[in-house]
Amino acid sequence: MIVQGALAGTPAVHAADLLKDELTRQGVEGDVHGGYGLALVSVRGDLVIWTDGLVYRWWTGRMSPRTGRRLYAVYGVDNPATVARGVMLRYVELRRERRGTVAPPPDRTVPPPGRAIRPQMAPVF
Image (tube, rainbow, N blue to C red; front, side, top):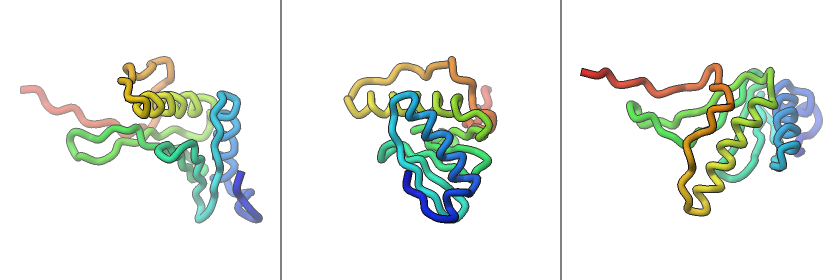
């Protein structure tokens, strides 16, 4: 963990530490970095989870077909174990992509994020 002084006691750093501990239990190491009211859990170069102490966010690897913007998973900080399972799904997906294999459809055993940004469905005519 890379935090110093007063930063170690912020809600964001506390939430990041909880997630890092859950990820470590699942065999994935990460580093916590805090500052300016936010904290990051860096798992790998293309998987960084950030928190403000209220929610966790990370890029899903997908773009909105409607707006072309990145889609993010957003989970509350109240259950780091559930969040860690969601992060692990993305972690496995990234590892498969790196090896050049096609990732299977997402595992539906993880409950959908409560405040996830989801693409809007286009109207059917």
